[in-house]
Length: 97
Image (cartoon, rainbow, N blue to C red; front, side, top):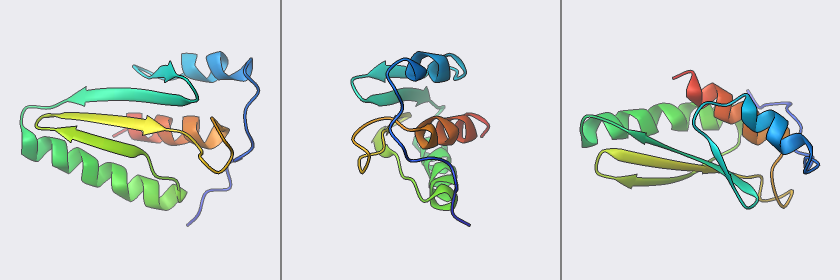
């Protein structure tokens, strides 16, 4: 299943509106980022595996940085040159994990 969510670049006025609907995500240039901290490395990897399954469903993949028990995710639609509704929709889906 591939997502039909828009990959059209959001106008800069739309980004703060979408960002307010997310928990713990922050804007960094033309990306949104969030960090999770887990009890240990195994739980961090389990989370990453869950993110991978969701990302495949959306055909949209975050940049992932794992540092022992911390997982840093970064979302941006590179093909559009910045943030799209797809980034925020995927972030919401990840937040539901």
